[in-house]
Image 1: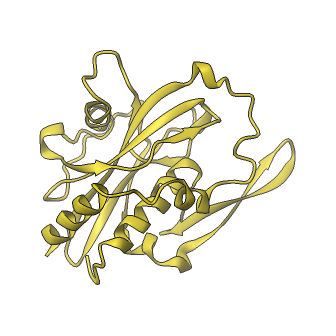
Image 2 (image 1 turned 135 degrees about the vertical axis):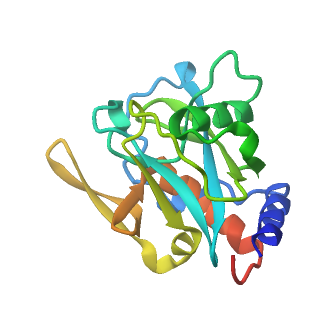
Length: 210
């Protein structure tokens, strides 16, 4: 049942992408209120990894350890910095995924890429890729990079009722950021923006069920 869905995702990703208009649906209003150096930005790749599970598709996330830098404690997609030894941005996403959660690169089928996104807080240009494994992965998370592996049904992101607001505190002031409220988790920031574009990709597949 799932293979036709993945084939449709691949087909949609070869066409014009939904782009920043859909990313920005989940963008925080204070997103560019940073003193980032655009000329010295770093580059990274992430992987939106899926696998079929009974009657749905699961999406794989990680929660970063709370001590792990500016994004500590946040829920994100597997990925990280592009190294000079990486032959491509895609290879970087696969390498980082294997290093972080232990899923071998050769077990992942890459379907395509989404629109690159700039993350002001860490001054990273991030290249998101979409892929899947045919079965539930056998995880071996890195204790230094991953506090928790989180799996969420793709249907929950497609459901508009699961969009909400996260209250953040910055300089002792409460700020509101769009988020996905799923399974007692709040996913916000660049990860939510990537998911927002991917939801539109899913909608363009015209799939009734996954």
